[in-house]
Amino acid sequence: MSTTTEGLEGVIVGDSSICSVSEPNGGHLLYRGYAIEDLVHAASFEEIAYLLLYGELPSLNALKQYQHKLITERSLPDTLKKVLELTPGTTHPMDVLRTACSFLGALEPETSSNGAQNIADRLLACIPSMLLYWYHFHQHGKRISTESTEETIAGYFLDLLYQHTPPDDFRQTFNVSLILYAEHEFTASTFAARITTSTQSDFYSAIVSAIGTLRGPLHGGANEAAMKLIQQFKTPDEAEKKVKEMLAQKIKIMGFGHRVYKISDPRSALIKACSKQLSTQSKDGYLYAVSERIERVMWDEKKLFPNLDFYSATAYHFCGIPTFLFTPIFVLSRVTGWSAHILEQRAHNRLIRPESHYIGPGKRKFVPVEQRKG
Image (cartoon, rainbow, N blue to C red; front, top):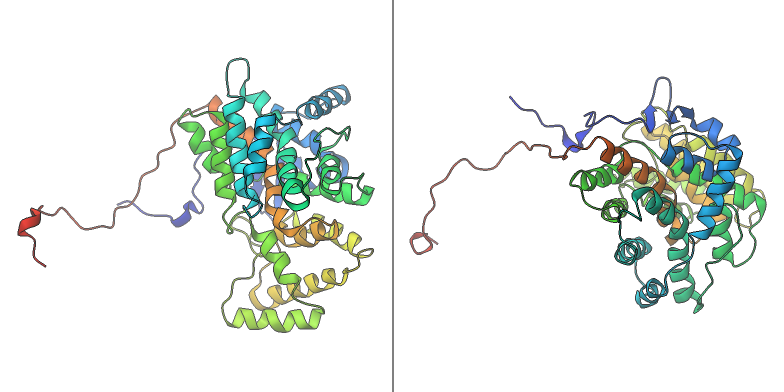
């Protein structure tokens, strides 16, 4: 007798050597064997991207060469810039990235001379360019240059956003965030990318599938929803009262709990520390105290812990990043994990085609339309 597991929870659907997510005594996350805590405290996002895409951490010389390659891949074709200009300013930025990545695939298709590894690096380098060219054109009426000598992707994104050199603490927080969002096993968007890849479709199609999946609020939009909630309150007491009322009305509070982790998300404390540090110099730093009170209420009332998205919200906010750009930042980072999974799926490919448990009517006799009653 067949059984159904809703949402594939607890079902192992494949082997992977990229990421390990488990919870022996609280959350545990490894990228190719390296603990996330060690990587956040000592590595750059470029090192993590190299690790995920190429399998090992780079030497100093290899890292410099990789950073140089990414710098040279930031520019956008003029025709893509035109598409971004024609894309309305009211468009959801996730739709902007979905369209831009797809169009880049038409301009620079995957071929024997433009292989998957090169496309992975190209997308990693130019997704910030796509997003912020569109943003500045429609928000400020400016055609910005996407050329920059910033060595890091964290610095590059913030430099393009602000149009001036970012402060070191903002740069460091953003670097930490990119590392934390880079990979997380078979998430919905990653699995979508692997399903597309399993059909032997092209690299860009797999990335576009992943972006479309991440767009959904149950996967990628929690940090935006968390920020919109937190900003409603001026004091922790006000937040506690309102959140308790929301819970009584069975309104979902975004940014808490996780499908895999049951006790804690190991990434949450790392980004929380960044949010706390930035709050001390922010004009609305009180939002950190509001966040902490919401965290306490959620634990006391529901035994739910904050996931990565919750404190990422205030960390981004204190960096001056507009809330509607939060989810696209997820893409900017996770494209590394998606790309690694696409490469891994191709290396040991089999078409992903699960079965369903049919619950519809049994076999019925067809009746011609003129004989049907009613």
